[in-house]
Amino acid sequence: MRALLASSISVACATALALPLAVASPASSAVSSEASSSSAELAGSTQSLPLAPLGATDRTLGAARAQGLPERNTEPFSLLGVVWDDAKAELHGTVQVRTRAAGTRTWSGWQEVDTHNQEHAPDPGTAEYDAARIHGSTAPLWVGHSDGVEVRVRPEAAGDGRATPGTLPRGLHIDLVDPGADPDGVGAADEAEQGDGAGARDRALASDALAGAAAARPYIGPRPRIITRHGWGADEHLREPGYVYTGKVKAAFVHHTASGNNYRCSQAASVLRSIYRYHVRSSGWRDIGYNFAVDKCGNIYEGRAGGVAKPVLGAHTLGFNTNSMGVAAIGTYTSTNPSAAALDAISRLTAWKLGLYGVNPKGTTHLTSAGGNLYRKGRSVRLNVISGHRDGFATECPGARLYKKLGKARSSSARLQGRR
Image (tube, rainbow, N blue to C red; front, top):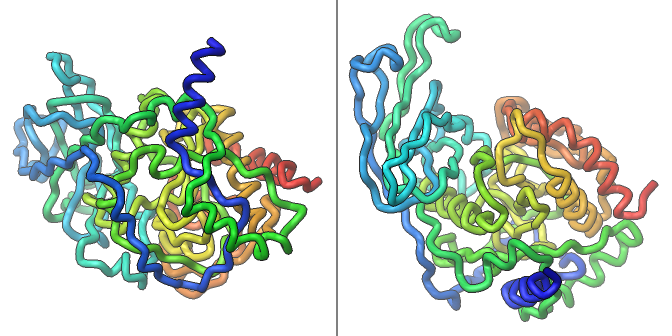
């Protein structure tokens, strides 16, 4: 066992880049022209299949307004989601899918897809939000290696809080995402702690950051081990070139990906590559929406590109992406408790990253809303430094079970910073 662990750690160290010890002093809303053109094109694909009216032949669907896709053979995929034309339109209804395990005749039961994904989005008024490529989309669902799919989408019926039956958004289609094979060493990186390699990019960031962090000491938690984008196999050709920064990091919003819990930790990198591809190619965002992700084994992953110590503008909490960071727990935690390892990872990550900006994880802060369904644009809102997504937007995210654990995460994070 020790020999196996040593081997895994060795491989993991080779795949991870060193991370900076402190934070640079960024220019507010600065856009970097740097592009990652050195990485080779990685495998992975997206199939888009249009949905059509299903008729009233299936009594479980109710009115003939339902749309879907009958049983169909497909190319291999592992994650799916339903997408539509207008990013500002909401899907009021239910989305159900069933899939066939690749190479078998075994179909899953019907699974619900979380339709509330619009709150994970760029802030209104930003170039990313206003881009013509932005689409509406459900949350992505990880289904494992599959080669068949069936879909049914049912609008809200009369009586579901509506006087008349609802209508569905235009241009409904299902996107089936294949994450591609893991690059060498990625699987091992999921199983072992990451080493302290010495990537040139991060050495430069650390050199620029020393002065900015000095004022925040001694309340900076130990830097956690973070699997970099290279470590989980991010294809840098997918995202938009360059990086966008805000002024600072004043708060951390905790999310769940709502992609289901049916994954092994050795598959977490594949899940993350799939979500990345779905956010960029299906939802139309410039990069993955979250700044960081954690899996149920406590591994921490770099999310949106631009530097793990920098205030990278994400697309995780509609209305409150500026001066905040988004941390997503991979899975669905509405009725399932998050693992102790995942909570510990959130605490370690926030103790370090918030500490770089002199922020107390147990404190409160003020953020200015860019507009959402809870707070109007321009309103200054007092929030916990470590908040759940639902604190800034009317949503179930990060799930009731994870949300209840945030008090513990705040206390643990503060202790790791050396606070009482």
